[in-house]
Image (cartoon, rainbow, N blue to C red; front, side, top):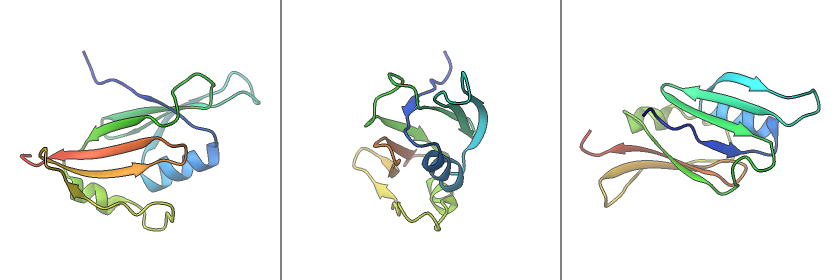
Length: 119
């Protein structure tokens, strides 16, 4: 098996691009619409992490939570664009041995970027 690719629901293309591309630093892998006025389905990636975002009803459920392992949580945290005014997450050390940066997207989904303390 390989890594799974979560599909997260989105409702506003502009806000999704601001959050995932500008703030989190993901890059576009592909974009798809069945027609010019159809909902957007977009694949984004950063490093080996790939996420799909969908405006299609039934693709994903708002309020999802995913965990994304990172090699260096401090570097990741430092890479977040401070000009983004809707999130100012900190780094938290959890009792189960992980350091985490938890960020909610504009659509109610939560992404937990994490690093094992042993790493």
